[in-house]
Length: 285
Image 1 (tube, helix red, strand yellow):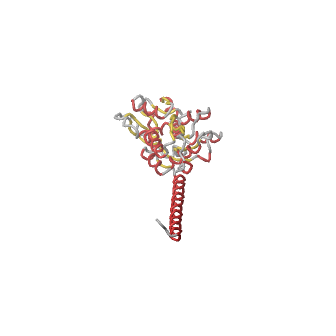
Image 2 (cartoon, one colour):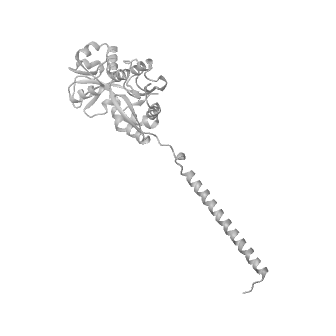
Image 3 (tube, helix red, strand yellow):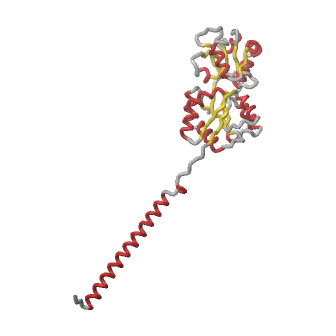
């Protein structure tokens, strides 16, 4: 077949143009894929992902009268909000916990039933004074076993009872408050002669609830925690020099100060205070 020379050149030029256009399309498509792939990698890069918190366990040393609120509601709710933090608790008289912290108890947070123990630890630089919050207020009350009628109507007439249960004034804040109240009423010696002293306020509550004592002195929050006891009266106005305050603070040697502070802040939050209120405490204002 005979093809004119001009036509041959025209066909070659057209073919060359098409090949150049095809090459350009391929190059552009490849660059677009590289760009899109790079953008995807950047967005899903592990270095840009939200950081995860390593699991941490903190120890809270708290007065025995706080155990119900801590175990039943406060700690579970805190761990729900901060799932990488596990909170373990040890509960006893504030005086015993103070002694244990002085001996090196690996606690991160301390919450006592009186300012005396907290101040003593702060004075020894064992609790960070800057972290202390005088968080709650409680009341001292006289109780009896449910369904009984001892010849006692108030703090002044407690000496009419045959047996009296108190916290040990040497280490139990509830016992210290009781001694102060009865001393101000001028009847401490008579009360002491009939008293059995518990190692913490929970023990006193149990003695009265079981009927081992005719009456006892505990916190108002303890009195409403069980149906085994009934309230007789609150400590008379003026019988205590100061309010019954529960402070909370960070142990200076805490290995996890960030998490300890989160727990303290949670207790002091509106959410935390509302839970404390449900257990009979009031916010210290």
